[in-house]
Image (cartoon, rainbow, N blue to C red):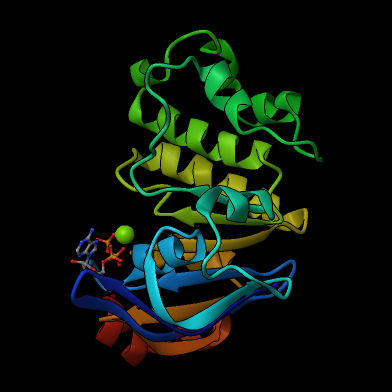
Length: 228
Ligand SMILES: Nc1ncnc2c1ncn2[C@@H]1O[C@H](COP(=O)(O)OP(=O)(O)OP(=O)(O)O)[C@@H](O)[C@H]1O
Ligand SMILES: [Mg+2]
């Protein structure tokens, strides 16, 4: 479904990705792991048309994404929950959800059933939600675009343990429905049971990739690259 081949991304004169290869098949949950500053968000931004890519290719169902505008890439069926929420603070919860909504199995009713708190605060401005509620809003908004591939960049970061748990169980439910997901996180714990396959990135290089069971069995890789 999604295939990155030898992607090189830059910030000005500094190179951030050095030939990244990564693939997500239909119905798969793939995790991209790595410590702070290793290139996870840059990889996501490269996919979404928000990075300066100077080499390699990124295809989504064999359509080349490199060089396409971000809004066109989103419309091809990629839904991003960006790092740091990035909801519209001056729009209401409802307006945030409707803004990028597209037809498909995810309807407003379904999203409000999944996150009842968004329904209770439907007419309140997004900026007045708690951190966890804003995170739910960001996820709900991405789902309402009915993406074929959902990408989450640290979607549970900085949240209370109970809310984190809620978000992970929501992702497990989505996986059960066959949703393809690329999930980025610094913490391996919850991803161990969620992801089918893992990639580990270090300083802009993919340094390890394998099935969930292989990572579970490989304590030295976990220790070396993730410190767990
Ligand atoms: N806007 C930017 N301008 C210049 N350099 C940047 C910019 N954003 C990121 N970088 C650099 O690119 C590298 C990769 O950063 P990236 O944000 O992809 O890391 P990350 O793995 O997502 O980290 P984190 O876990 O902290 O979110 C880092 O060395 C970072 O300093
Ligand atoms: Mg990041």
